[in-house]
Image (tube, rainbow, N blue to C red; front, side, top):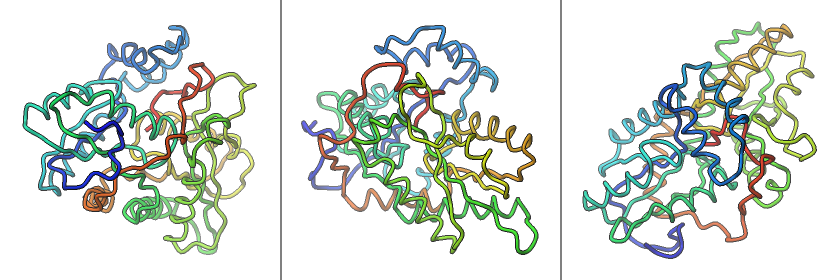
Length: 331
């Protein structure tokens, strides 16, 4: 394994693909062990984890993220001519176990597709750290594929999801919906050290352009947690909805699958607020297994252009509750 976990500048093709994701609990008994894995070493008290666990338990203790990753892996296996593996950061199948299996299968060099489109500590830098951590002597060389928030496959898939949501609103002629793009908020200090916000804003603009819309759109944030005195990216999606008086399509551009933060923050909290306000609202689906998104992964592999982040980009945050996500699924 090279010293650079991004594998920058390495030549040659890949003989496998590793889908590397966050992981999530599969049942009620998994919730607390999963959350403890997520915050290990951060000193987060169990009583705070118990609060977050209630969100998972309200969905039967099962996050949607693993099933959606299984579907993505199945779709990729149909389109690729190399084996496709799957591993997680925080729950089974764990990345280190998957890499051990890849070594046993004789895989020499694998592309790594992480389920997050943008830069940022949790969404990129930590995956680079994961790749370095799970690499084993004699195992496959692991090469992280580049950010893809501006790739046409992601943009066009997201635009198709928005079109579906607009159709569901079924608005009268002459009435248009406001697009409200959402992504996971992060502390302002973290945002200042990465291109996270700029990349998301560019991606939202590209989706709006793909839809041929002249109307303005908004970028808002969700899943903020931590002490109120620590600045995070704003406005919050719920606060923003309270300012609107027109039909809305929420577009979760910061996520590639409908995991817990999407279904709780948007399907549950935002939906309830919109109903209370009498605000017509639909939520666009995430890209998931959209054919254009699946084809994009193949194109990223063909580019042979691995991630080449600056070493000063997206540094690790201080390990405090102020940087801990609300539902703990950030990609």
